[in-house]
Structures are given as structure tokens and as C-alpha cells.
Figure 1 (tube, helix red, strand yellow):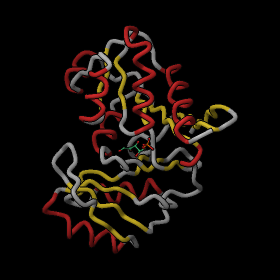
Figure 2 (figure 1 turned 60 degrees about the horizontal axis):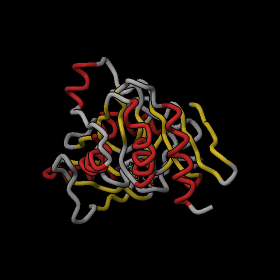
Figure 3 (figure 1 turned 90 degrees about the vertical axis):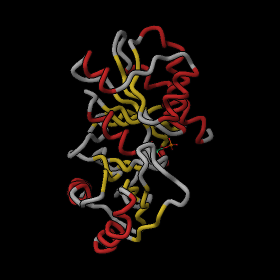
Length: 225
Ligand code: 5RP
């Protein structure tokens, strides 16, 4: 099976977590796109969606799936019922690295506003420790050099994502060379650096995966935190 087929398989499996009549959060990336395509088949059963990026909102609308502003959604419901999104890496405790597509901040907001985070990945995303995938950090542009200096102090090698601006008008530093053995401590440390909007670690301090659905050639494995 190709990686693309594994993504399709796991995206379809996530439909099981979509409750009728609720508002759900939808992630960003190629796996999330496959989930959106699957969601289109049951679109009339849900009240609406909140998108984690402009690209996701566009794809949802193209399928005729209602997209709500998060503030409007939270005026109607206390929490979104579920957030469904991919990841760049996940470890043995369902801590995640996200942000390969640059949507990490909105993804973290929508994940945290949801009762449950179902993370959908193919088996290539499973790691012992996060860090082989460069850690994305969304940074306010004037803080670029300052935050890069802190990332170096922490043992990383920050690289500016060239020609990329986030949906929030900021830049991304991709930090290479980190071996992340304590994701919660690093997430907390980085998110306290002035100029950092958020980093791409999703640990217990934000919203790690409550369930990781991992697509394999033998089927979909369900991994609970
Ligand atoms: C986007 C993300 C994505 O979830 C992550 O990059 C995985 O993408 P894909 O499903 O294309 O492998 O965090 O910001």
C-alpha cells in the first residue's frame, strides 16, 4: 500500500468519531484533506466545522461543508466535539510535532477548544522521541533573531522557512537537530519566549492526541494516550 492509500484509509476511519449534530474542528495537511473528502459523504449529519487554516476552510467550502468562525461556534457550544488532524511525528505518549504545513497556531487553538483530539497518521509518523522532524515555531517577525538565538541555546539549529507567511502574518523557524525527550518541558519553555506565538509541540500543556489512529497495511491501529 502506498503512503497516500494509508492516509486515505486512516482518514475514513476517523469518521467514526464524528457525532451527528455537533460542530467539529478540522486540521490542515494532506491527511486532513483526505478526512475532509471523507467528511463530505456525511456532511448533512453535522452542524458545522471550524477550520484550522484558510486552505482547510477553502476545501471544506468547496465540498459545501459549513465553516464557522471559532468565536461564533463557542457562542453556541462550550466545546467543539472533536478535532481531527494529522501530525508530523508522534511518540509513545501521543505527544505530537505539528506545523509542517505552517498552521500550528490555529491547529493548537482549535485542538484546545475541542473535547477530544483524534490524530490521523500513517505509520511513517511513529517515533521513539520527537525531533527528527524539524520543530516548527511560529514567530512574530521582529523577534526572528532573538528566538533563533534561544533555539540555538537549547541545542537546535533554527532555519527560517523561506518565502512563507502564516495565516496570522508571522514567520516560521524550523528547528533542526533537537532530540526531544521531555516534550512538555520544551513546549512550556518555548511558549514562554517573547515573540514566540507557539511551537509545534502538542503535549499535555496544550492538547496531545487523545487517540492516534495509525494507518498500516494491515488496518488502522488505535493508540490511546
Ligand atoms: C500542518 C500540520 C499537519 O498535520 C502535518 O504537517 C502533517 O501533514 P500531512 O498530513 O500532510 O503529512 O501540522 O501544519
